[in-house]
Image (cartoon, rainbow, N blue to C red):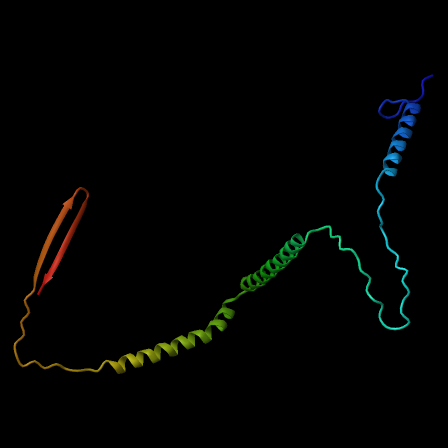
Length: 165
């Protein structure tokens, strides 16, 4: 009787042997990796009082400084745009709930100010124009001659009137 095959059709003893070989190969590869320190213990004696002096640590950054700067700047820009969007949303929500009485109440001071400015401007304009009556004691004649010239070329025409006095 054949041993029961695995899901992919490999007999169970062959699958077990293959699994042992894969685990052995992995263990050998792990033992050949270079070892490096992952933690540090500082055994220098601590002072009896006061602050502990700083311990020098190697600076091994994973991300370059310029990339971190760009990331921080992009977060700031995103937050700013989000704030502007929220402000616009609030303004538009307020405008969406405007009623006629609210618009009239909001524009009433501006309308009153415009009416006062128009009245002052009209008063100043009338004060400037003095009414003077011209009395002529001689006869006045005015000779006016109109000269008209017309030019038509193709579908466009041009008429030019000159007023000679």
